[in-house]
Image 1 (spheres, helix red, strand yellow):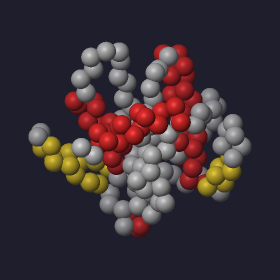
Image 2 (image 1 turned 90 degrees about the vertical axis):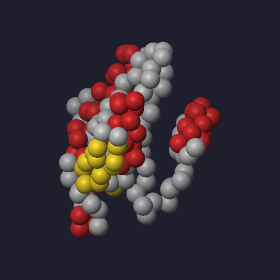
Image 3 (image 1 turned 90 degrees about the horizontal axis):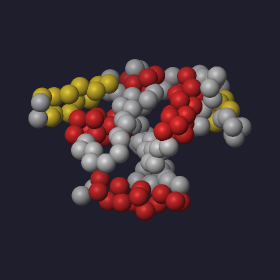
Image 4 (image 1 turned 120 degrees about the vertical axis):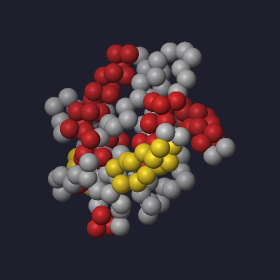
Length: 157
């Protein structure tokens, strides 16, 4: 959970705690990016923790961020040059590398599970940072547009 995605963590947590699976399997990775959930940027007015009241009491969550690494991150296999912090961003290191950086290895592991288990749907939650120009935007593969829009509709009911 990086500083831009506390809702993704909460959505995963809710799935683990309350999903009712009537067919198939549900696999939830509550924390796919360890570094993104262990450090924060309090110097930029980000809180260290946030709290959510639940029927079982208040739950405390850590606000995270990604670790800065190289000056420029070169994505595999596209060779696209990205900002340094994107080496810690799962959506920017997809599909990953077996012998790459930790986030590339994580993506590679997810990719292999998807392949081997013949996963029908894989959802990678992200939300933009508050200053991002893509706030309230759905980014999806064209074949998943209907499902993405439907998911957004149910999220705001």
